[in-house]
Length: 373
Image 1 (cartoon, rainbow, N blue to C red):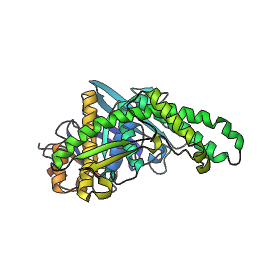
Image 2 (image 1 turned 45 degrees about the vertical axis):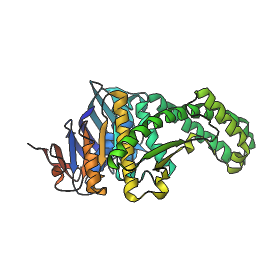
Image 3 (image 1 turned 180 degrees about the vertical axis):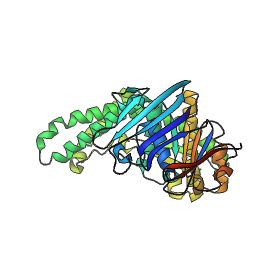
Image 4 (image 1 turned 30 degrees about the vertical axis):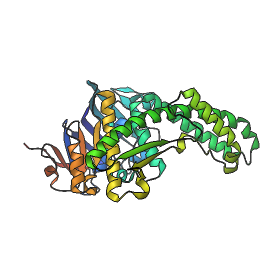
């Protein structure tokens, strides 16, 4: 799996630019605020159909313009694809695949698979539960299209239920349909929990292996934490649904009092430990970073195991946040597959002896060459 070309028009600080990548390592260098992260955001969007730094695609438009685009040409599963995301200031974004407009943006999601590793991910362990759920959802939405559809519906139903709970104080008649939304959430939630349980079981095995390479004396443990009434997250969806219904009906009065939906997979978390002790509470800065590295690199291995192809690895200025030992650890794990790596150092080419190097300035390619030639 590899990206051959990305063309940007009126995206972030790019007026118009085109990047042609090599199958291996591609280094994007330049000072801060020159467009390095913007390029990785565009690459990730071709995979997830989302901009990872904003909730609305139109916010990716260059200041003062009405429209723009991200166009990518890539190879996946031995086939060539073209995906174009057209951005507009006054209407919803459009997604085109191989020249055909998609009725649903999700129809182009996950064809290109990427794993993004940015500085914020180094604090994934100590961040709140929402960050770890986002980590899970980003991977599963690419791996399992059905998960993406169920998650989107779950979030819509959840928003409706929360609105009913809030507005019912002034409009008690809304409570007549509250249980309908609770039952629908239980059905959708059961599907999400089952997907997450199986994914986390495999992820924990891979992450422990990767972590041991970096810290041989430490054992990384990952446990999935979901609704307390779910006795077995690996059970059938029907059984998990029953457990969720029992829980929500038993806590109905508490939700009414709080005017909010208090339980469900939207509250899920991961309990991450080092040698049986909470990494978040007791891990050193180095240990926490190593855990985050292990999770991201294990995610990459999961993609390979699932499809037989490595996803495109997007590394956004993470090497500068790591000591030399951990830099070497990361670089030694990316000998295969395509990598887009950003850094600020002028001697970027020295980090990896073979690959293509781009120097950016003000959203333009100032210079590019192939290292080692």
